[in-house]
Length: 226
Image (tube, rainbow, N blue to C red):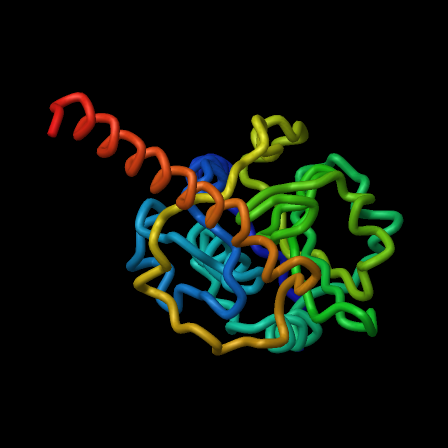
């Protein structure tokens, strides 16, 4: 089978990542958008790791390449179509290439998939207090990368990473769940460590808002007298 290298529209990719990383999309295990071209990024509210990759790849490759859902199926798709590379050597390059990497052999963690562009990851996770689309230095995932492939190149080429790094750090969103996703379709994808705890900040924020509202009502009633 012929091996492929897909071209990513650099401007389209930058615009999409800027939107998805603005804090309104949260990480949610099993959430995906199955028709990425029909759903605008502002309408996406939650994704898991493979759902994020599928959405980004289809919306930003010049060929609107459609990947399967689920990290296991995506890895098989890559094995059949792409050229394998060495994460430890190639992920640190700032050469305008787009890599895709998989964690599939770590016994204590379930599967995960992410992109690497100019030495920074592009992924959806709840790792290290993040909650949603974000990025880390490439070597933050070095020990977890069990497989890696050349997915494509930026067109036009771009070699910096300022447009990829999520700065300032994103905070968990209180947006509703993704109405365009199907829950539970992929229970083999994403970071489970701290998954349940990832909703805690949002719960605490809601509780604080409710307490503030109650205090306001009570103070208003007291000020009016009996």
